[in-house]
Image (tube, rainbow, N blue to C red):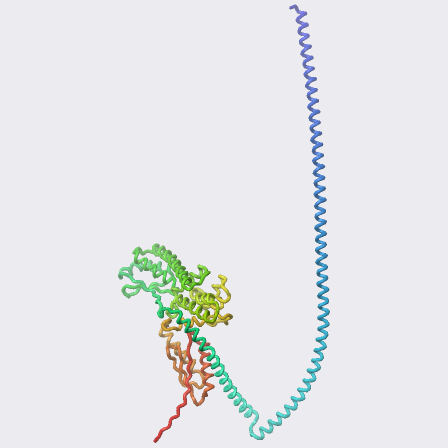
Amino acid sequence: MNIPQQFDTIVMRIAFLISGGALAILVQQIISKMKAKNLEQELQNRIDSAKREAENIIKSAQLEVAEEGIKKKEKFAAEINQMRSQLREQERRLSKREDVLDRQGEQLGQREKQLRDAERELNRKRQSCEAKSKQLSNLIAQQKNQLLKITSMDIETAKGLLLTRLEGECEHEMSVLIQRKVTEAEEKAEEKSREIINTAIQRYAAEQTCEASVSMVDIPNDEMKGRIIGREGRNIRAFEKATGVDVIVDDTPGVIVVSGFNPIRREVARQSMERLIQDGRIHPSRIEELVAQTKKDVNQKVLQIGKEAAVEVDVRGLSNKILSRMGALQYRTSFGQNVLRHSIEVAFLTQVMADELNLDGSIAKRAGFLHDIGKAMDREMEGGHPTIGANFLKRFNESSIILNAVEAHHGDIPADNPYTPLVAAADAISASRPGARRETLERYIKRLEKLEELSSAFKGVENCYAIQAGREVRVIVDAENVDDASAMKIARDIAKSIEDEMTYPGEIKVTLLREVRCVEYAR
């Protein structure tokens, strides 16, 4: 191919390239314009959608605001109506009170008028009484002058004579009245009370001797005493610290004495000592371990004893804490009498007497069973066992009848129900039956001496003797200075003095003897 043809070919290719590039640029511009148009259209659509959404939100907010405004208007209207009704009600009440006040004002006016009339009448009567009093004073003065002239005595002598005579007459009449009232009460109450008490005693039979509480532990040989004491006494000190009791190791062969005021601690110590002797391993760590286990066993045993006692007397609904305290009474004695057995006796006796009087036997039995529960805690708290027991039972929502029976069975507070006297009577019966209680010789002698001292302090008493182990006091009076009516009053006063000054189980009989002996000799 020649050069002109090649040049034409090149030129044509260049022209095609230029036209192709221009066409590509044109196509690209068209595409860019179309994209821009589409983007603008999409942006416009989004703007329109946002505007519509904003309009919807505005409309919804306007509707909510309008609805909230309507609700608030309705609420405000309801409050206004309520306030109006309250105001109308207050206005009606005020009007009614005003009417009542008007009526009361009228009544007060009438009463004031009546009081003025009564005051005028009283003034008139007072004036009349003053006039009569003056006349009586004049008459009395005249009579005094005449009496003084007749008797030749001054005023003080006559007054003393008159007062002495009036005192003697009043004392005589009082003695006669006391004797008559006591006789009437005895005639009515003695037969019925004897019948009820005899029935209760016959229907419940219990042992007449009680189990004695001991604090002695048998040991196999004297070598064991040394092992229990330990090197420089470390074993016995560890034991006393763990149990809270005193251990007495003396020359008495074959025994060790465990001493402590708390009966539960003493029982824990006794069982722990027996287990240590049986185990043979006696050292401080073993002592602490064994005492802890024994305490746990004794507490479980105490709870089981309380449950068995509650089942025996058929008292239900008691808390385990109450049953534990009742079980602890198994290890407590009063004058040698086991307090738990005493409580069971009182429960049965109270029930029998309540049934005889047509009262609720279950309430009476519950009150009798719980009456001495304070004795399980009286060595840990201050106060008497009736108050301690009542405060303890109050925490377990016991009825007011039970609380009063527990707190008042020794007369510390007045009885407010018929069950409390029954509990007190059953308590006295259980404590005073033969063989129920015992006391130390020293306390027994002091009680008899106090009884004779109180009885001999009254005027007219010549001799007095405490007999029947202090259950009765015989009083001998001067027959010349004490008549039959005065003797009755002296016996009553002695009984009252014994009740106020002494503490004793059961009752004490006061027997007063007035004897006139006429002695003559034939020669």
